[in-house]
Length: 604
Image (cartoon, rainbow, N blue to C red; front, top):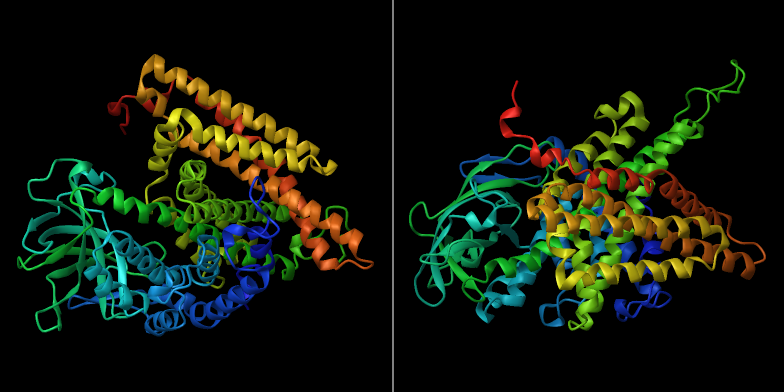
């Protein structure tokens, strides 16, 4: 059943097809994990996803959380799921042995979360948010906070959240108003309001721990004055009993999709009795939170790729089984054929596969950089590569995942628009990802305004070197000559566009430079995914060659899988990569209507 929402073969192929200057046959960044142990872990994750998550996929959507008398009620299957995830060590997997973890590499954690999210995205976020919050407490919290919060969080008994957004501030975190008034022993009284808090309250756990941004009274204005606090729903009194902490759920947001996990509004300190504990140093909260946010951006991209993957596999299964129409050259009285044989249906399936598998590959590339940094934090090159690729890894799967799940609906025809099949839910679940953890516009500003110019453009130089190494490796296969040439030309187009935008900044200033940052992000994303497809085509070509030479009777299904990779790579290079030419032309247009059109012209 797991194969109906993902391909385990593809996941393992993608994990082991990393190219460049890092090992690929036996990747050292995966530490002591071998293909055999990884296979065991993935099978166990898929079994859990099949038994505990996928069965409630539709029910969590159709019977979404409710708010009654200030308490949020979620699907009855969430509590036993979290208990299992805690007892079996899934939540603690990435933590040190001291916390009963395994120090599992980021690459494998991303794969596991991918498996869970393909089965049921809403169900997967509960544990994911807790892992991120617990890791933040581990890295920056006091020993007391660690000992108090981490064990119940990793056991699945306490929920963790990120509490950033406020009604008026929104993405502009420097304008937040939640206030922290000093008490004693790093305790503060918290007063304020937060909105859009994922899993901000629910009855599947015994407590909720909010990692909350607030401004200490008298702190500097703007982002420099923000501090980070642990603000639990329940806190311990002097007798060691859990009591209320004056955190009130003000509303439950009713959403387009992603309905299985509650999104709440919170008010702290209505009775002047909400207490929070400072995490780390004063006024460093935003820098601490960015650790969780950067990882969360990869998780958002992975979640988007997972949803689109599940939609693709549903569409693929339907296109194989649905008989309708005939080939244009067939006799009128011939039998209807499976719709997968129609070229336009193949186009839609190719597009979906190009998006979802390219996205997965990029996110695992970022996971590799994370793992190398985990072993050697001083590796500045890996840090810069991760920095420049994170906006792409978050945005490309999110934006293109909307189009991919839409194509899945199209494959089903009228049925796709109805809830008889899962793709309409996948389409709704997908939409939030372009908003979560920084909108597409914010990611564009981050890429062009910060990542491209950091250290005099070194991150872009390093990325170009990575791509060039992949091109050189791919040149060993004659069938990839056209792709290597196309990618080289595309790199030159991006490089010229970047230089032209730099000249525009010198001429007209930063507003003109950043006016169409989202389009630059889109262009950059297409190029990066083309690079990923070249690495996969290289790995597939190598596999076909070695397996054909080393076996008298090669496994036909295995060869078809690799040949399929080559066909999808060809599709991406012929149908998607050329789009950067149009984007480069738009970015070179100095009329910049998005900047120059007066607000008053938006009139009825």
